[in-house]
Length: 229
Length: 229
Image (tube, rainbow over all chains, first blue to last red; front, side):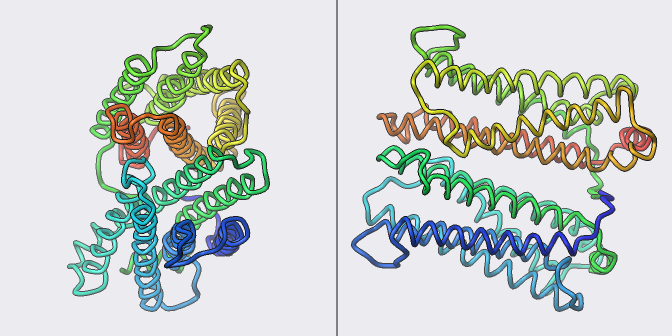
């Protein structure tokens, strides 16, 4: 894109936004929604694991994985393992996060898979899994031929950014859906909890914006890495 | 990005998806929601203008404006006017579309500007307006110096894609929010209307994906145009 800006300062902003998004979602779930639990008679506490694992797990780990080539002063081989490992963690935490939504629904007698949020969420995690497996096989082990790697790399980067943006958008749908449910059962539309949830969603979107900006920004070393993969 | 694929076939798919999204949103509003009206005792008909103008106006016109450099076999000067004009139409229709949401709320005694959808919608239209004015002044009239144009162009393209993706995401939030309201007042969660709205949202997202792909794809002629601006 030739933006002419260095990636490293953008990655610092990204880290900060990721920490802020994680803290905000935890403040919401712990201070306003009663905390998190794997098993409880209050099934809402089971649900609460879902937004935490999606924001902290899928999105923050996934975003950090994307920018790892730009953010870390390490050798290419090490950054590749960090990239693969963080994406593996994001995928695993995302799967558990989606499982908790089903667990909450099933234990509460709530219908599954009727909303756009749920449809897109399933789409995101399936595409994320395909992308991770493809990346593992082509770029890590056993590894594709140089021609396949060269052909795959720009598509791997573009498809990865697409799935990440879709994940951020789907999380945003989740914030709006949950808040709409709460407001329909009496929560103040302009109260502190409503404002907190909306701001958490906006910080999550900004995290996504800075991940994409960091990925597009220039880093001579990182550019070499990409070329050399 | 160097994707190595030609843009023109992608722009054909984009046109088709834009037509399908427009038809689907009209089928929903006319066949399931009673049609559209600027003035009516049934205030829902006033609301119905909102999704139509956002999808057909802001998003389809905006997307077609973005890909006009890749889609049209015309001279650069003509394509620039088409690009500017379609974005102007998108912005104008988007502003009227947002106005109808306020009109519906005010005439129905519904609160304004509490939801994430409304916050992001205001953000999108403000950013779209700033982007359009900046583009007009720098690239059309009176026009910036060659240095300013050269510096601005990649940022103009990147910021334009960002605002467009945010618009598609915000529209998706709108589909989910409206459907959640309807389901909370008794609409069948797995019924034909719910499926139609979700599929319309997915087609709108796919339109957005193909707009971005078309913008990133290679067109020798279009690349020359960009360089020459």
